Amino acid sequence: MPPDIASLDEFEVAGKRVLVRLDINSPLEPVSGEIVNDNRIDKSLPTIRDLADAGARVAILAHQGDALDYENFGSLRQHAARLAEKLARPVSFIDDCAGPAARARISELNDGEILLLENVRIYSEEMTTFESTVKLTPEEMTGTYLVRNLAPLFDLYVNDAFAAAHRSAPSLLGFPEVLPSAGGRLLIQEVAMLESVADAPVRPCVFVLGGLKISDAFAMLERALTGATADMVLTSGVTGEIMLIATGVELGPEVERFISDRGLDGFVPVARRLLDLFPDSILVPTDVAVERAGERCEVAVTDLPVDELIIDIGSETISRYQGIIGEAATIFVNGPPGVYEHPAGAEGTSRLWRAVAGAPGRTVIGGGDTVSSAGRFIDLADIDYVSTGGGALIRYLSGQRLPLLEAMARPG
Image (tube, rainbow, N blue to C red; front, side):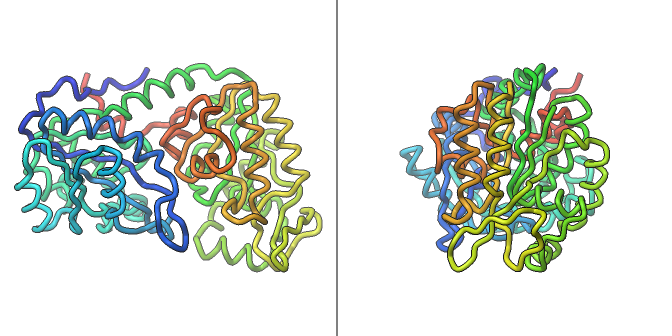
């Protein structure tokens, strides 16, 4: 059963200060740092618009990047400009989050005014590494710098950050402990839609897992394959590379350095255990692609190691995965197969996305980079459901608890 979360319509917000936690964390162009996909921003607009139109004094908390995703870490200044353009109304920005300048500006808000605060992850207590090592309870989070400084200024807390629902951070779990709370339009919609999918996925159900952020994939694989959701998992990207290492394949010094520098080699024993438990359900690449002299070069796994970084899965793997996708009744996708931003690494992403878009089964995708990559190669209207969540989507569909939904649920 989905959690019972209060909606915006249950509160009178005119003249009230409302703290809104969004997830507008967006893929950034590596060189310019510009936002390259507006999916999460677009889906956050109804909540902001409804609150401002009703006369609320709106302050927005959000994040961009993380210690584990540092290439996407940065200011929210450009997000404010995007929000203002799409809402056709001013959205102020302040280069502070919970310090004296931010608190003073919040106190000055007028009815219907919108203020975006700086990236909440400028505080260590909001970083994923803090979450995984300190492990505060929601009650303990009320004593963090963020919550104790901001909560007294507000009358209502609204969470519309489904994409971060699998995280345990003060901005997500601390405020519902001390403020009346409601789910935003997107949060309520995401839970309702995903509940209908997760309740009884039509079989066979295939997970397509790639990308660089692999912790979410490994966190849910065992439960999903035990019978909760997935019948088959197609691995690619760094997830596939970790699986190959777990089978005893040497990928090459550059790939292994890339993995160890990011602390991802710790997932190898987990991958080895999963492959032992589900040898017929987890598929790994049989060939990969590297870039040599500016050209795509495909290498069979049996011919590894290589001196270059792996940038994609190879044609044989792509064709095998396409066939399985075409026969699936339900398809969940999280993470692109390769470095799709570059021509030499885009073939796997392009071909698999076209297979997903043309598949007769029900298709569900999620995650910022997933949606961004899909938008390059297919019409997103060909996907049955585009979620803002990546890790949250996968965990929800595999039956795992989502801390945010528990924190937002009404007692009883």
